[in-house]
Length: 440
Image (cartoon, rainbow, N blue to C red; front, side):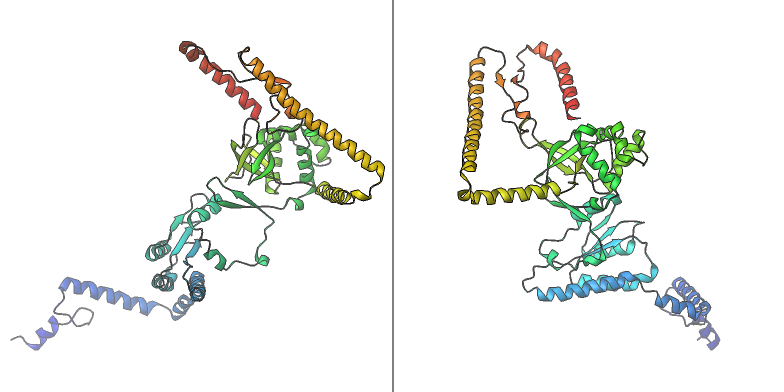
């Protein structure tokens, strides 16, 4: 038998708590130490500090709560369960210890409702809380490597389905400003929306610069035809645009303003045209037809000025001529409807004009038949087929269709293997150089 004093010493810990006979002594020491430190922390903590912490509620919790309530209200209206709701969080701030408990409550609510929580980390370090939220709910977590490609990240990783887009709670027009939008059909079949500034609100100097560059006689900048989203647009190479700005004729456009004197200053002018929505950087694709036909244009994800880049005109300039043409078209239609009321001399003039047009069409068909006959006759005689007006049926302008006057078929290599091995690199180099010179 042990006396009472020994019994009390064996069942009491150092901090006054009663010892547990079923706990390992070393674990009891650790537990006592933790409890003791917590007691010291609580006794040394000011009440005002606790009140301040309790009031620090993160805004992300309220946003998630509102999103969950909105999803709950909309899904009740969807009887056929077409909607597959998701929540997307765009994160730019680090984690905060005060947001853990309320944030986890929202995450568990989303998990219970089978609502994935997607996270796009735009700026800053990785966030552990949102990573847990995405993992628990089965969402997608993506950290952006290039912030300039935000639109591409959102479209490729977080694009909602077509049915759910009808229920998106979008901001009203008075909450944001969209000056201009371009819709581009990508090669993958998706449609990309490109926001551009309204060029009509740009300073007058940039409008005059655009008019100068679009005037080939003054600037010497030759624009090519391209196909962008099923429509034809003109585009040019950045190097040629800089050369046009450095010409003496551009000094008449700037007038009192500073005229660029070097390539760096001309580079800045071209860059400002892109910022104000006059031009858009594009990538060239394959031709839509044969030789000389327009190329397919695709928007470049990095909108910056480079000498070897291609830039498409999205500013159409003054629409006065377009309106005048539309009015003239309406006048012609009305005049045709009132043809029975025309005087005799006007009817006679129209008759002569129609005969002249028919003669021109007949001449065109005659040229096509004659050139085909000449080709058939010269094909067995000449090493290459001889054509009159080789560009007659190409996708070019009316004048270019009759230039050059004649031409031959491409050269066909019929040399020996040894000769072809020696001549091929030279031919390829010459062809590449000629093609590059022509495209520039």
